Length: 284
Ligand SMILES: *[C@@H]1O[C@H](CO)[C@@H](O)[C@H](O)[C@H]1NC(C)=O
Ligand SMILES: *[C@@H]1O[C@H](CO)[C@@H](O)[C@H](O)[C@H]1NC(C)=O
Image (cartoon, rainbow, N blue to C red; front, side):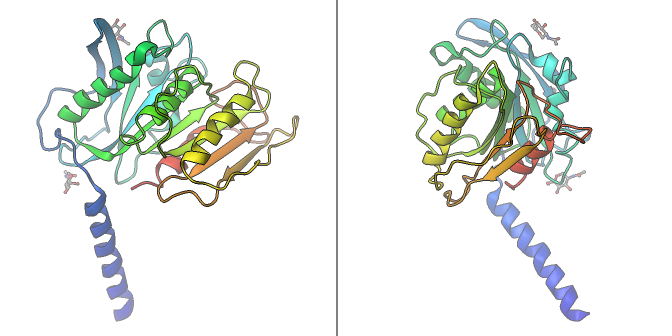
């Protein structure tokens, strides 16, 4: 009895210790601000941009939250993702899962011409601007910045992995392609990707190439992961071995097309949100 009590106290102390070591509070921590949920604008290279934010229900300005960017695909916008229109789940289905003791603040930006061409790096500059504004106003753990997106939004998350690996903790690229460039592209960053075998728009071969760039950067052991057979309605998830500390790579190949919410045979809900969350939430 006594031993058990001591060990649980020890565990709590250890957890507190690890948490306090890791947290890097943003300038917005402790600040009272009117910056809240909803639509925000920014001017980047003389162009007006906008993005939507979602705060936890009882936002606590001294608690450092994760910051999660959710980028839309071509022909959509920040509201399509935020509201869960078309085939999207709201913020890619992450908010209900992110309801743990760290929590998350979500940012859903809008691209120019409904895409993320990132011409001359202007979308990366937009990301830098949003990050600064959000973190100057809200309490973010600057070691816990994430990005995800589908299709063109996956491309933009890939561009972030290439150019902002030191600022972001992890990315999740959902059926992405190299459409937003890869400036730098040499630094390690935790990398999750999922791709449909039968993707007619951005073929899986491209997704494998993007993945392999980070398999290399992250120092993982190269391999040719198994993929499901067409018609099986399944997915195969591969966690790469040997990656450097803090830089895992997970690859999911699924039997399906170009879709942000693939559902496996016999399932009622997509695995995309759960897998993305499992990957992001390993970082505390
Ligand atoms: C956000 O504000 C911008 C600029 O005023 C506007 O163009 C855009 O439609 C707004 N988005 C939403 C979802 O209200
Ligand atoms: C706000 O967050 C701080 C830091 O995590 C915590 O100590 C405090 O108890 C929280 N306040 C509320 C009302 O939850």
